[in-house]
Length: 189
Figure 1 (cartoon, rainbow, N blue to C red):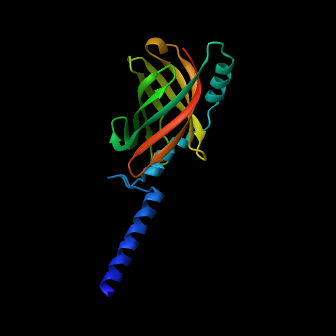
Figure 2 (figure 1 turned 45 degrees about the vertical axis):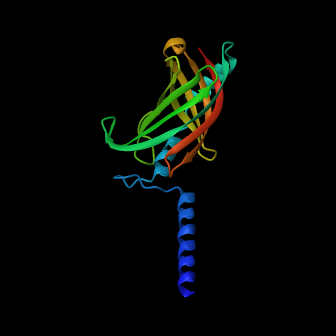
Figure 3 (figure 1 turned 30 degrees about the vertical axis):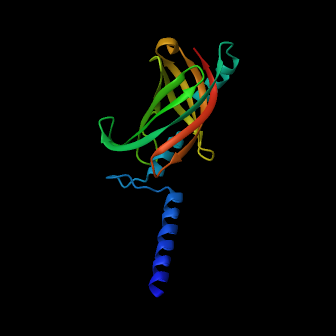
């Protein structure tokens, strides 16, 4: 009987300690000691940019501007010492989604981070199913609601002279290094 009680208590302790670890979302990245949550949250450390307000005001008054809605999901990785970021971590977000005016698309967003703050511009490329690309740049956000602001800065094909903005709301799973987002904004092309 004593053995069963000890086994049950041991099982309960391990069960609850695993749940606490999952809730905290603190997973150390191999070879870096940096915590995945801190590295991902560096996305939100961009200083608020006047670019977003300016683009937002211009697009809202643009008669050719169209509303865009986006939903995306993907994976994130943090690689130490790459050619693009030799002394820090190269943060990469790769995913697939669906958006008005793009349809099904893939996305790649990358930047250099010290694990706390971005050390470079946050740049991305959305590629539509037909190969047309839309270039995006992170310009700020609100970490209290996990929102990030991006502006559109040209592209290829029908998006060659694209402009606009989008605010995306993110959910991160630091244990599995995955993310999801949804949002809306305005685009002209």
